[in-house]
Length: 153
Image (cartoon, rainbow, N blue to C red):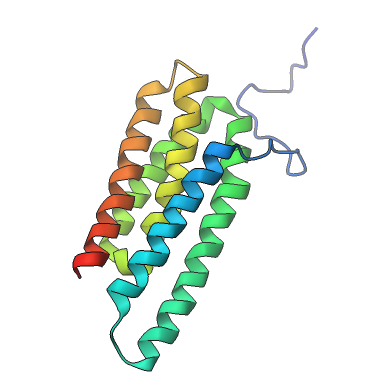
């Protein structure tokens, strides 16, 4: 007998243990972090001392946002596979939109999350493969385009 009050699309409880991040997620996060740490100084410097302080502050904020997305949102969304592909696509679209403010580094944090969640959903479910593939492509384009634009100024 099943529970009639439980819906299949219910969100997991807040205290639900999320699965640990995979080594691929860590690799994606490390590569995006390395691109951020290479691109930000090239894009922001040379400048005045206030530019250096601003770059450091924004860099730390983006690293914190990326950590929150990769360590909290991505594992949590994987628990509810019905909506994970859609969430990955939303993250991919947000990463492309964040390219408009590439100097903040947000495309790196959001794009890494779209890549990690999209790749995991491409392997695990057949229903949302198209959305997951689009998320991977959008996230990768956002990260690479932001890095190139930071380098060429």
